[in-house]
Length: 173
Image 1 (tube, rainbow, N blue to C red):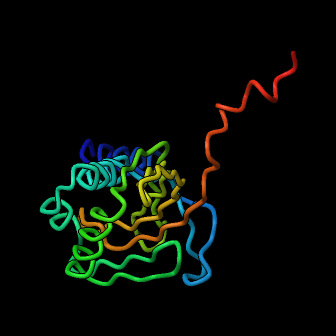
Image 2 (cartoon, rainbow, N blue to C red):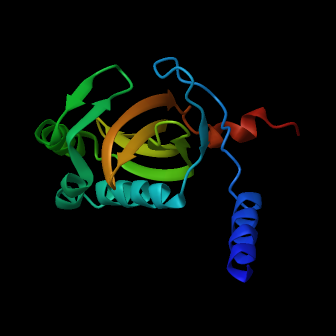
């Protein structure tokens, strides 16, 4: 009888303390019914390490963190498919424009139904274009699978040149 009471108590206690079903929010038209919840900062940490490797020009780490079939869609719609193409494109870009990223926000999220893990992050990117420093803001939405960067999408916004040199002319005196 005592064992039966313990069993009933354990089942009741477990049922009352079962995690609530995750409802999520949002949608993705290519995955009807999918909703999203906040993900783990482990995903954010992977992205930060990935961007740090870019800033350090550590191609070995970048390639280790890329999935074999990495897919990238640039802000102009250009596509990079696979590690080899990614390495060639990055090497050329590093040489041509010397990009440097500074992450200013990040949010990991995951699909409730399919468990896909993503990070969306905002970056301030400094480029050197024909000897001039140019800044852009990039929002990047990246999927991380088994600790590897599987694919990401880049959206850019130009940042106006700093007009601080002209601030005296426009101030009220």
